[in-house]
Image (cartoon, rainbow, N blue to C red; front, top):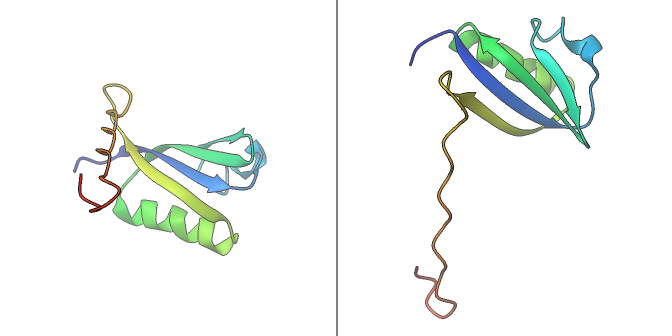
Length: 89
């Protein structure tokens, strides 16, 4: 894995841009009842530090995504439908 890397972290609850300095200058934006924290993270320990800050604020972590620098993240294929009797795809 190459560092630094761009990450998008989603948490439940709304934080405003004033928290950007506390989150090491990352971009903070609200999306409905969620907050998106996005930007370059220097290395794995820095990523863990951000997650610790989220925990310390008592925020509910929704997702952490490493973003592809060349474009949007790849689409996740849909799960195959399961047979209702056997539970098998």
